[in-house]
Image (cartoon, rainbow, N blue to C red):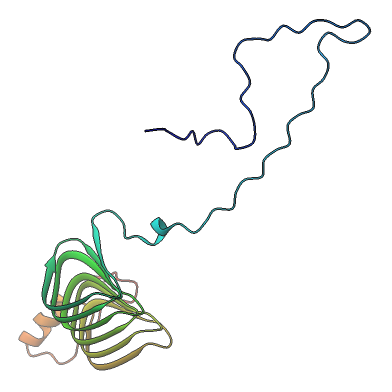
Length: 187
């Protein structure tokens, strides 16, 4: 198999490694100046399909794929097709693309939604609804981000339960404690 050398620009010939001995002409310099080869403009980089490919340790379900049943795994998943059933990614991140249509209960570490989801969405760390998303059902997460244009219909439980709030309820005190907006709690 032949191997294309990528380091050399096309159109420029390779100079020999051994010096050539040219006869000296009288009346002129021994080594006349040679015209420099015209620089070859770099080719415009074509859009590479690799840039859209999921990163190492991830999988993809394209637009033409339809899955009925249970999808489980521990790596990241990108869905731009249709899933009907259950979707469980223990330690993975789930991204539902703009063409994705999921009719399932979703459970993942992080869930990013750009398409349509019907069902219970549980994101242990974070759920993010992009401007193109349409979610119908229940959303449960520690952190919730909703972009302008997103549609959310259903029940939402966001934020961590603070241990002091549970103690206050047990002692008969009235009121609820919410964590600080910055995520740090003052003692």
